[in-house]
Image 1 (cartoon, rainbow, N blue to C red):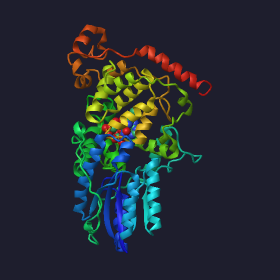
Image 2 (cartoon, helix red, strand yellow):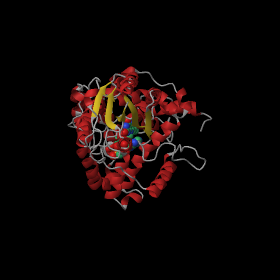
Image 3 (tube, rainbow, N blue to C red):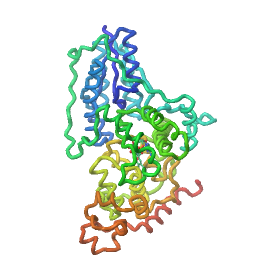
Image 4 (spheres, protein in one colour):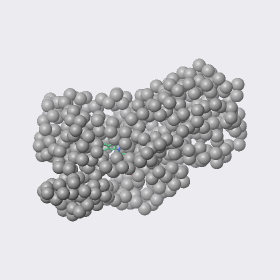
Length: 482
Ligand code: FAD
């Protein structure tokens, strides 16, 4: 039987710094095997996992581009349609009828994905083939950053300290794009798999996000050259382009975290080791990304939507669908919350400060279960990522590891005055408030007739009152706990 090394691309949609890819090519050279890149779309599972249409569209565009980029190194890459994860196993089953396979993958951490990979592995093993895993979603793989007792850190700051000390010791390495493959090019026509369909993403098409490798790397480079120095100052202001906007690329692995850190080191060699420089603060955000992945691997029950602080699951959350709908559609009467939700609905992305404000508002002003918000975000975000989304929601809801204390409740009006002081962000997303000035726009309801004439909604909740309810809800379940 012919030997075939398959690079099964999933959340590592790139040629640069891709261990699975580089190893598959290297191994093929030594074993005299052919090489094939493979991507399997699973729209039914994606739907079940609540993946946003815009993210699905983004993945399909990136995969098409990756096919062209692969052709440049003489790598045949097939993109096929496989409905769900059962179909994926069947595809590998079919391949083993014709080839002795070695399948190279980057490990995924979520339960269904782990199960899928185990099933593929069982199918391959039965056919005298192999699955070879690389734990490379993080710079420091989950399980590698442990405290002195050998346990996983539950608090971010000591995790980060340890993470940085390891980074300083071992540095960061990125693999180059593989050279043009000269041996055993895979004969595409020998496979009959169902081809990859473009989707109709409607209004939420991802075309505002370039998907060519060169453009993505250029975005990273110019962020590190031009913006990162001011990151600590600007990252909290949603009206300003003060963050990298790389999250969608990191979520699908169109770029690796190691590429980000290596570039940062190159562009800001002194700044990144100092406290509170833009470069150091940005590096911290990349460490947060890893922290939540480490937590997910250590506490797999999180994927079953359990609260990290188990006692908070006893809180009786509101089931007010009307209030939830007002929050989703950006009609709560709180301008900063509404502008943020409209940004999410219209663009598939939301600024981090606003993710915190809107999440806090859903949980601590409307008293709605954080899981409803988590699900809604996932269904809309282009950068939807289970560990970051779950981590962010549980942080804001005070149910997570190293979460904001439950008695620290964001006031949406003062947050708005502080982080959108001129009201520019609000005006961009709430045309009804276009004529309000910087002083009045954060809480226009003092001028109720003007607000009504402008067609903006009345507030659906009183913040001061809601705050008291939150404190009581948490106090009840926390009694004797803290
Ligand atoms: P930058 O500020 O440039 O940060 C660089 C990178 O660091 C980001 O691209 C991201 O990969 C990572 N990062 C930054 N902040 C965080 C964080 N708090 N936690 C984990 N990683 C972080 N991020 C996602 O990638 N996917 C999600 O589904 C997601 N859901 C969130 C939900 C809530 C309720 C909250 C509070 C945060 C969520 N975040 C999520 C984290 C953060 O808001 C986004 O990563 C960030 O806004 C993306 O913009 P950026 O690329 O410009 O980030």
